[in-house]
Length: 344
Image (cartoon, rainbow, N blue to C red; front, side, top):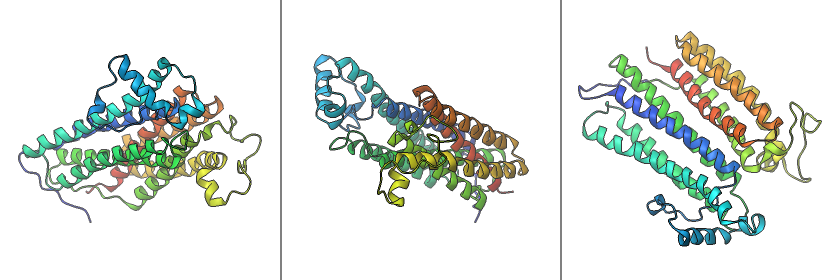
């Protein structure tokens, strides 16, 4: 059921929409830095979760040596990075520290204005609960991030790829929710009393298909499955590569075998493209041509970047651009789904 929103005289929906778009831009930056953190194997360089005191990086040689000593206790150092210098440790520490710092900045950039808007009566009726839910999702993302890191501090030499995928998907789900809410607020600013958009079946199906594609993309990153082959469209001379190890069940291989995960990611992409084309056509029919253009542009660039990343051996720059475009594709898809679900 569509919800009619009453607009108090103190409400400022356009201001709130601009604020949410700014937060969305920060999340996109967070996704990119998270991708670089993974690609540079930096995610386990900080072995403790200190939400408050962790804002301050090590100051002085003694603190750096203490952080390095903590890192030396985990399997990643003991099995993979024996002999790493302090300078090398500082290089990987930088990306993980930047990733966590930006997460804190995003939290403050959402929470503090939200409190101010609420106190000043700037939030239209019907939106307060949604904004609080988005804030809660941001808090959950921090918890999931530490849950992911914790998986690599004992026994394993890297984080769980399942937890990595969960971490990325929560971020992208939050991003989609923020963008959707911002578009609702923009529509309300243009036409007071505008109904909130409804998620129609085509929009829901397209977002679900994209969700599967993004999940397998995260699994590819977590398993380093992009390195299984540097060929396209074949994989090491074959269309279907088969499992990496004998005796794997189909269910296990689907989510844990690098070759199978890579295969699903590269070919599910075309199912995703078909759904996105349908959504873009519907968005254009709903008089939102910019949304249609955004969807086509995002998935076109994303496909080309994915192929180039694999064929060039997964260089950090291309892989980071691939992740950036993935986040932008989420925004474009949410935009299109919102366009076809707007109240009239």
